[in-house]
Length: 319
Ligand code: SAM
Ligand code: DTB
Ligand code: SF4
Image 1: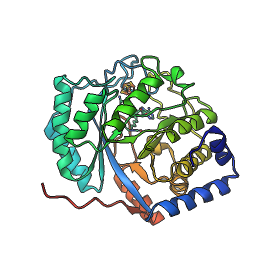
Image 2: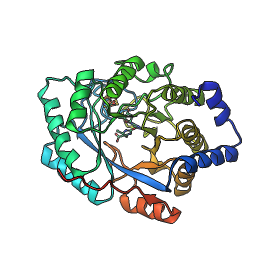
Image 3: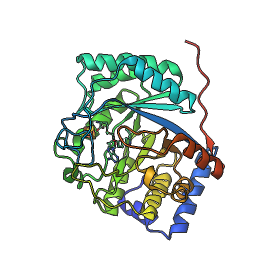
């Protein structure tokens, strides 16, 4: 069934245990194993971004103290990707602090070359480079990108409070280009930016309208960044986070629901509830793009303690 705001709210507002039980049943009916996918992030071009996203350490509009860097050289990227694979990641996501890409730009050509090299390592290759034209999307797909991350972040109504340099509709246009090029869509949001719980459900309603459905839905908790307008926001309530994950699991049964930024502020018990409610992917490794993430030892210990497996890589296809 395709959910709208009314049906999502009915799910979300159930007594907590009824909601997480329904989410768990949905998970069991749609996923064979109790497994969590490990996805490693790397910022290949950090800081100095023209956009004013009020949560972001990489925006040039705010003095966040972040060192601006140029595009990382290919050997550095490959080395990190190989290490991620050796540590058990099956997905590698490269991010660039760009408003978007221009097809004929040398920097974009260099990203395509990077993608061609990384895609030989046998992991899913995801990139997040900002806005894309249909042609840029086709070139990324041809180079070997399997998924494109482009978050809508919050409801259409609240979006202009968070970003003014591009619109919610600009984000939707890019998602359409990604789908037309045949890449999977990774699209989710951030909670804890001062939005209401209704804004969160409205974002989920938009995701439920995608055709095809998003392959993965990252749910980030705001990591307050010094110098940004959203620094100082209070942490997200754990039960609100679990309710949102459970509702997402029920509404998008086959999506990878990724428990994303902000795990450093969640307890082990809180994370366990998120997995019970249907989260089946995490960002893995000491660093997200610019911010801290739990260490890999802590994550292995937690998954082991909960008896959760790790999604295995597909066998390497000889070139
Ligand atoms: N520039 C590209 C874009 O905007 O799509 C890619 C990089 S951007 C940093 C990727 C996503 O990271 C954002 O859409 C947002 O959802 C998430 N993110 C960024 N800063 C965050 C923060 N401080 N806390 C939580 N999530 C954050
Ligand atoms: C997503 O939804 N979260 C990731 C990934 N997609 C690119 C990024 C989180 C960034 C957290 C803040 C930082 O590291 O700067
Ligand atoms: Fe730039 Fe992306 Fe950060 Fe927005 S979220 S400021 S587009 S890097």
